[in-house]
Image 1 (cartoon, rainbow over the protein chains, first blue to last red):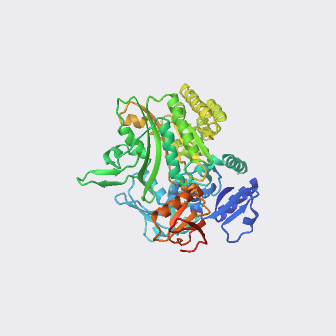
Image 2 (cartoon, rainbow over the protein chains, first blue to last red; image 1 turned 90 degrees about the vertical axis):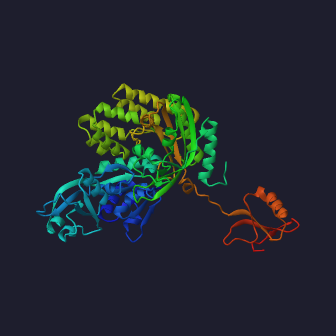
Image 3 (cartoon, rainbow over the protein chains, first blue to last red; image 1 turned 45 degrees about the vertical axis):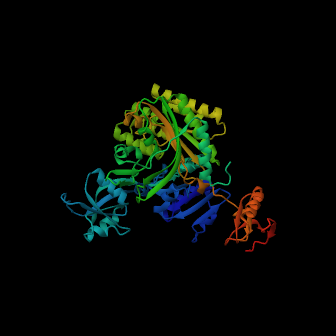
Length: 205
Length: 367
């Protein structure tokens, strides 16, 4: 039985379609409802619906053999997993944004608000820039507007939310898109199955 | 063997027996070591923190974070050959969260002139160790010098090598492809896919060779695989040139062992001459460690009963009568002697021993 961690939400729906086309469908899952575990013994698959930010953790700890997760989450959690395929969709970038016209004061530590503290710290470490991290869980765009921080490090898709809040991107930290990942031990035991799914996905994206 | 013991303890005993039989001698390390030594060799500890404290004289000590480094430190430069094994706990502070973990591990280190057989011997011990754990296992064999050889041939800079190692550890062919231009990127991507049954994978590895050095590595790995096939024909061996291999640490053979049910590699090791050079030792060295934590979770003891026989006795029963009864019942399996039935206790059958030594069947009620 192959355990597949799917991120709840739009990305998960899209990923499930892909798995389904590869003959790993699960009619029970398509019916919806509040269940979190769906099984199709005939196809030998079990789907786990988890928060997008937790997919890599489930896979790293072997609760799921494979999963699909955004590169942004992988960069943040630094999960020790195989990143077998870039699925291409869910494309966005991790970027630094500030209020329009903001001027950086290099004599002070930079105050950075973000949901991605590890990514932000690694980025500013690479620039040798001293920072003060402010970890937020949502509505990050508010931070510079209210003077809570100088800049934010966050996911930017179209830039509309930034624009509407008077912010602009001042630097790109990394690109991101959905990745097909596998647990390193599971890969040893289920290599043929996982390679087959991976090859099937590669043909369809 | 040792069927009544929890898995990790049974494996400890089985491996001690295996290592002793193979001519390896037990090494015991001190619990505390000077912090300076580990600080000087911090890069070998793979980013995990040390647990440090001061002794009565204010000297900074570290709670043993690594056994191999201690063995290397204690190796005399004039030693021709030493084969050691250990059963030790090491302590590391996790990078995320910083909590201190105790990791129980066993391992072997072969130090001296490491020839083709010496590497094969350690690989065979690794395969036998996995067999002793039981269940479904995989032994993956790679080689850091094959990867380094390809990097050299492609002329990769240090910065690109670091990125390539990271991408290789994640088997991310796409990232590897973007790290170099023209055919070089494709060659790196192929490296990520060099993983599978020995014959096929070594054949594909030969096609990727760009130097005599790489061809020699393939021949050496083939020798290790043949040795494994000769003495461990049932071992599930894979060749994997994309094995995560820290090239500051390993310079040749790399080993990883997996047991179904444990989400990380339980066995890691390889040829670690760079550490020997850093510590100014002239010998070569190869070894592996097997992490015991997690084995008991992967192989839970499923028992229908807490004891096969619950032997009840009155507090004033002569000890000799109870001891004799327990001895006589031992053939039936696990025997537990109690004065009353412990709450929730599941016994195959319950008996009571009387003062005169007579045993009577009891209906599981307290006496």
